[in-house]
Figure 1: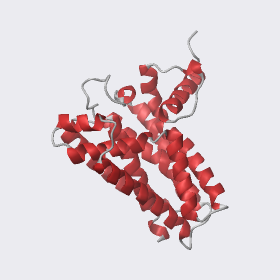
Figure 2 (figure 1 turned 45 degrees about the vertical axis):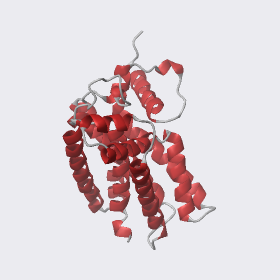
Figure 3 (figure 1 turned 90 degrees about the horizontal axis):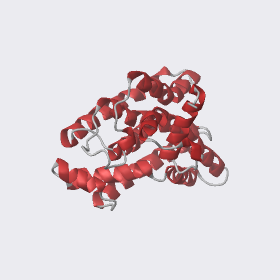
Length: 267
């Protein structure tokens, strides 16, 4: 018997949880390719989950330790929850574009599970920027126990939506879809599905702007747009499209950029 619409959407949501996190899911969820492709609409909602968990870890840790320690513990919780899925993509992209000068060579390096110097340095710098930005926000005179959790809840969904836009705007770079992590999300997204993902990704930021009565907070979308355009052109020029690693790298860079942008007014 076919699933009802609510049950089917629940199946898609749990599929996204299964694919993008390390959380266990019921066996009845399944993992068909088409199901995984449709589940990408819930990628920003996974950001809600990761943001909520990391925010909760930070808030609890901040009761016992200084903000930098709480931020590091929160960051570690996020890495454990996602299995370093996106961090791995960032390291692979740094290695690929740092060590390769042809499309084939870049893709081969990105496929290699080993992490090289470019990947180690790139990932370390981006992680350090995120930790420093969040620690700095908590240490400012305007900071509070709620500042960092709010930033986390805003950044995780929005950064994932930024990465997801490439599924709509770029082709998948690997000709053989049996190769690479992004096979389930290698198909283009219909406009209605992209609009639903945008709603999920933007909702926390818009809510924060309305709650604080500071619509100027929405200006963070401008640097994100610039980042998306620059990365999109770069991926298209060298790879002819995107890969799963490109999505992970975009998410990590966008997350760091959101923290930097939203904490400007706290400086």
